[in-house]
Structure formats: structure tokens, C-alpha cells
Amino acid sequence: MPKPRQIDLICCHDRQGEITPLRLRVKDDDGQYQSYTIRSYKDLSHQGTRITADGIYVTDKTIIFECMIHVFGQEKKVNLYSNEPYLSWTMTP
Picture 1 (cartoon, one colour):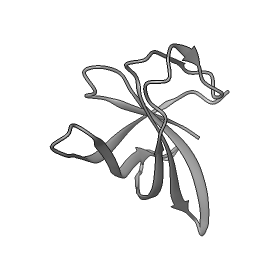
Picture 2: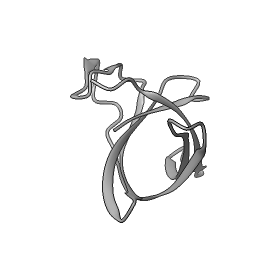
Picture 3: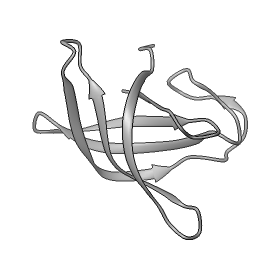
Picture 4: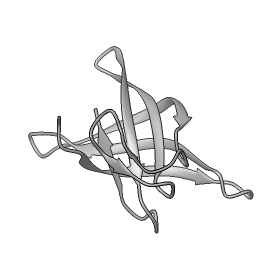
């Protein structure tokens, strides 16, 4: 299993408290930042305590998004995770 990577995430918070992920930025293996627009997402949060398919331990309070991004001409699925207080995000391919 690949280790989760720390990312920068731009997201929108609406009046009802819903979070919409918009863009992410990750440092590549060369130390350069790469930015990606999130094309689509699915909220997989609040489904109980478990270990996800990519080996991440989550609780009912973990925010989880399954996102599609465009990388080198291909659509790629990534998962984004954050735990309270939702100030840092990680990504798994």
C-alpha cells in the first residue's frame, strides 16, 4: 500500500456546513508542486469506523472524498482524508 501524501486542498464550505473539494496541490518526487482540478467527487464520510480499501483507519468523524482528477491526459481516482479539526488533508492514489 502506498503511504498517504500530505496535500494542500482548496475547498468550499457552504451555509449548511457541506464541504466541496475544488483543487488540490501535491509535491511530486522531484520536490515540485503539481496542482489538479477536481473534476468530480463522491463524499464517503460518516460510514463508521473501519479500515478503507487503501489501508487507512477512519472513524465516523473522518471526512473522506473519492475524487477524479486529470493527470497527463488520463482520469485518475484519488481519495482525500481529513480528521477533526479538518486542518490537514492526505491523499492516496
